[in-house]
Amino acid sequence: MRIDYEAYNQLAFDRPGDRILRITLNRPESLNSLDAEGHAEITEIWRDIDADPDISAVILRGAGKGFSAGGDFSMIEEIISDYDARVRVWKEARDLVYNIINCNKPIVSAMHGPAVGAGLVAGLLSDISIVTPTTKIIDGHTRLGVAAGDHAAIIWPLLCGMARAKYHLLLCEPMNGQEAADAGLVSLCVPEEELEKKSIEIATRLVNGAPSAIRWTKYSLNNWLRMAGPSYDTSTALEMLGFTGPEAREGVASHREKRTPVFPRHSSA
Image (cartoon, rainbow, N blue to C red):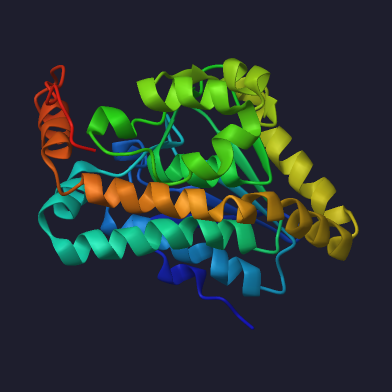
């Protein structure tokens, strides 16, 4: 089965080693933010990789100065204003998480600079996640005025514990690469100049390992994430519900106007 990777517009591909596919989030002019097309592509690529018999390991990285700045504001404003867009993105957000969990090939993420939003979803759900000391990980959902959906409920408590997860997710508290490694949120922190080399080294080791044993181990371990599926599904549904309300509108407006948001003082939630 031949996969048409050239059909993707916002993802670039190369092969830095035998049976290794490297995916590059490729909108460096916007710190690899994801618009509607990019969000769909980062969702669907994992199904193609799962079906590709010529690939045994994957590397995910970002072009330019950062890994990913998350969803761009044109897509967020469309979610707020358009029901059909909101339903489409809800399904994509759900499928993005489960497609990565169910992809049978081991995934290595190499994150530098900002790591936010849907890009961060893929980075943290990768089987081996590598960062640099200057990587800035932040889940900004509550600052935007919506629940921390995407991936946070399914994996943050498992990786760094419930107390740390609540601290960072409720307050949108950023974490640099070394802090993330120390907290157990990522696998490794390496100097920036070693990031590419280390990601290829690890992917090569995965390629040279026993392929069925590695894939079955990944499948077994990911059952921890599948068990958290109901919590994740709830968080994503509540995120989409939040996009219908005043808090999300204020969150987007304050970002646009580069000011502190003024959220309502009370909630009936």
